[in-house]
Length: 223
Image (cartoon, rainbow, N blue to C red):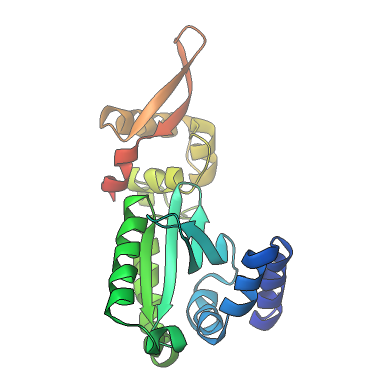
């Protein structure tokens, strides 16, 4: 397994190669000490990879102006913006107007489906274990367990988390395979979630067969 420095270089170069013009320049200028320190002290010790992370992620704000979040974490239906705050010239030069704009931007991002997670640079530097614990507590609400060892750990919550992390609808076969349970148990859980309004069955043919289940928007409230 490659170490952090090697993986980070691959990660950074990969995203650099995907960009051109101002978006590439923004990545070169914006991915600095605080962002790298967050990856090294917080993200890497937890996950040992950068899957789903996008540095200097561009989103248009309510004024249709480009905003670049330090990171976006995108996985299936999940959309998070991660910010490291409290260092650099943009902080020293921030006036009340810019501060108001920043708060409004965060609220706007929440309104269009992103969850905004902000870390203080001082904590990333001095208390990374606290940042790791809090981040893990939050993301564990949304990420499904990887192949639990015992059947008792399977719950409807875990199936919803799996649905949130996928781009395609759920299938009984996929649920059974992911959690290591039998097909009948998977169908029972999926049907129970449909009866509660968290999933919607997708009918095929004349409506007599159901092979897929689609996540409802209200499922965010489930967890």
